[in-house]
Length: 364
Image 1: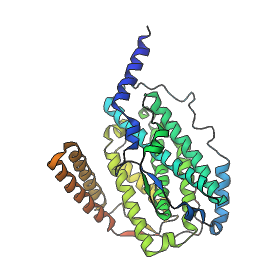
Image 2 (image 1 turned 180 degrees about the vertical axis):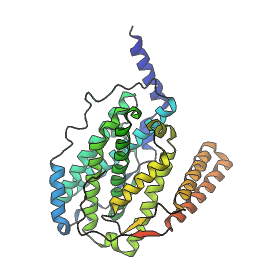
Image 3 (image 1 turned 90 degrees about the horizontal axis):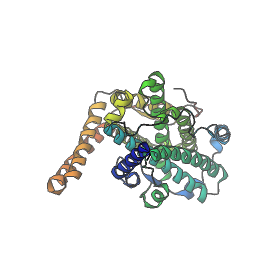
């Protein structure tokens, strides 16, 4: 009898019993990545003529498929000792992988649907190329989960996950920020581990450099889509919406990251520093298309992020407790989170003059 194989199988069974990752991915909460649908007919009517020169350069780059052979395990993929991994780290790392896989697959589903429904050759080709990239990312993360015996059933997820309807402009704001903040997150971790390789506890981090460049390119595509119609970023009402999405995306990231203390400790990363660094990179990049920028150095910025974090902990405790006491905890936590969010939303913003040319290249 192969005792090592038996132990390995038993470990997979133990992890699989503890982590129903498909259920984790299917669950719809304020913090979990969502699946989106939109007005595909409106997307299909987009005329990219105002940004044609930059558009053609970006599409040529994406057609060349620079990462075609990247998302495959090779000799750099070290064997993972899931059995020896600290249980709390293992739980948070699996949560990180499931959340990342869900976010990537969400993009894949949305982009693939646009390709299927549309007839505009410019838009259909773009979404086809982005769907290709996101499918690779999701599949690669799922391979990492499969090693622990907890792969997400992506086919089931497509049918079971609730879909949130957003108007196209809201898709632009949310997805642009998601792609650019993804770039900032991945490259910050990659550079940190490049300087501190002893803290790289899983090989997937070695793939982050090329990975984040895909995220960057996708963000460029949404920047160009927004620049096809100046009203999307320059009208008074839409500036207020941009501000809302910036606060929502940043505060969600803060709460989610601060729930993964063991994960960030294993990486040797201070969470406050890391999140502020990601916000700083994302804000600098977003000057290409957003006329307003959050003041993340304002004295009230971090204190109110921490208030939202505490409020979400109270809401989670209320869910776990149940009954009237749990309900009261959820209500008061929700009110506290709302007040802190409003305070962040009403902080003074910095105004940006939009550049003549929208295109950027990865620089970190």
